[in-house]
Image (spheres, rainbow, N blue to C red):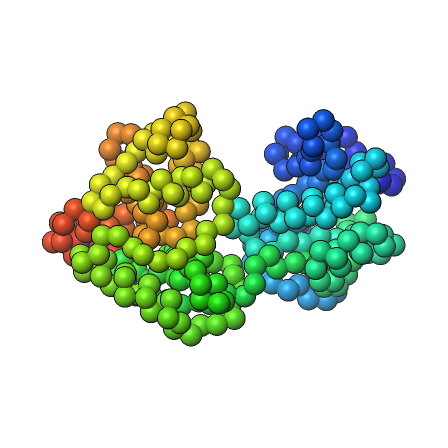
Length: 305
């Protein structure tokens, strides 16, 4: 399906070695394949046109369907799987380019609701039509000032669920910055938490992640207020006792800080490990939950100094 000897075998081997080559299979055969990379496409820096978004994005390269399975909707299904992979990695924009004469690919991208953004040029000087798709609808956004720093709250545009709470804003397309009822309730519950009056949150969440990540995040929500668990204990709880390292990675990707208490997970030696808000914040939150209010206040003062 490619011309002029592209891609060469070494390119394909490099994709596999870098773990960015994905196969779409049934029980017996490879139906299709594609390469998916993140934020690493210099040719997209210059475009005769305008991209839909700025910030993190995924790029599809070397997409192909086995000739035996063409015209069966495989390519569209593969695109949808790649979109899911982007969402699982908290990437909300997917880009792809194709040569101007590739009508079938252009029709596929139109059907999959990709937007033609302009023309880019390869290093060889060849023109390519560039497309982009925003993978989530525009969202609502609000800031919350806490004793441990500013929290960035993101919610669905219909105000039905929180998508993320973190110490840095996510790369979401923002359509609404009004203080919605959901944000007001989240702020109320956070106020109660930081004043020591709330030990359990009751807020609707919608977190994008792999099935494994979802298991870890669900397990985090079972850690009682004021207690901690090790990565190994969480791994055993989800039925995969050898997955401590993977649990750590999933813990690090938790999109909803504090509400989903990843700060309650510590190293096997009892020491505090990495945290998105920084170790002083993690220490402060654990101090608060252990009713060491004086230490919590002292830690907050140090962070503000």
